[in-house]
Image 1 (cartoon, rainbow, N blue to C red):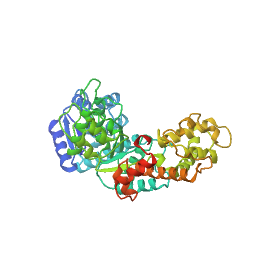
Image 2 (image 1 turned 120 degrees about the vertical axis):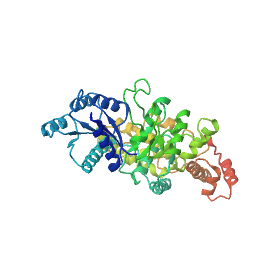
Image 3 (image 1 turned 180 degrees about the vertical axis):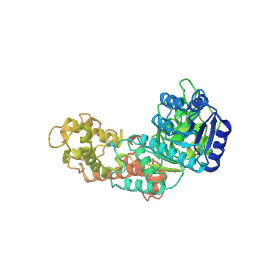
Image 4 (image 1 turned 45 degrees about the vertical axis):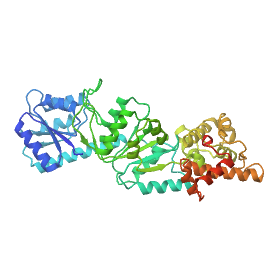
Length: 464
């Protein structure tokens, strides 16, 4: 989408000529304001990317406009121009916040160059504002299990294409970090990554956050605001918890995905957008479609490509690596010294299924152990008191429980059945419990063969 340049000058023919040349030479969109008051009104109603401001105007002059913009917190780069040739007045304008100054006699190629410099600096500042300080977060990319190798390969295949991606996974598996990795490996890596959490917000707020609004669109909308689609620009827009999106917003999002245009709340003119959309949810959207709470046509638009983030219980081999990662990186944030984790504690952590909150729950458990321990080692005695009560939740009757040394207890037949259950359940989790797809992945002849095995082992969806 081309940038919008506002020219504020009481000499209308000169302002119109500037607007024409900026469209012709720079490909910009333009607006003209015939004085300082009209310019401030336009800035409060529309999202402007750069202002070219005359210093000498009757009524509100350029200096008054700069002071008013500062007072109203209108953060838009301003290039002042003057026909008096007064260097001191231009320096004073820069001191008041102007990006730079030009003379009205400057050739238009020089003006276009200055506008592009101002826009570039503004874009850089906006991206820096969106950069989060480095924090310790659970990374779904830590681990060498087969599930993680497959996940990284899928990210690598999809990162370079512009199509929408739907990320599916249970709570706490790290869906946003997968989205960030898609962005980091994509050609858009130098553009913005804009996350929006669609859950728990009123419909009007989601509308405003996604599509933006003009001044007066609703009570409290005192100035125009860019929505997430515009902020993402040519980057990546991440719609987390897409399954929570209100029905009315689903319809408007579908129109954006189909037409590549958004319309701000309270506005009439559409705006072209070019962000890549990546969505995520822990919900079964097919079931939500059947219930009538999610639009089927929107689901078709979102799931052009699907990435399934494996639950932690399908990544048993990675638990040790994750524990060591958190034990090494969390202490500095908590003001503690790193300490090793004992093997008995490792075994107890591996024995848990982590079905409530996956990697996030494991991270929180390690943090609680660090706080609870004053000794040289994080040991089994430092595990949260409720961990043992929850550790075997959902384990089918008759399944052998890992012993502290990492082995299995019970007879050979019991251990064999437990291993078969683990293999089948891991495959079902990896393929979202699609019986036919899982049967193919396990090399079985058809879905009925897998159903017979599941019945023999006592595996049901409720056990997951």
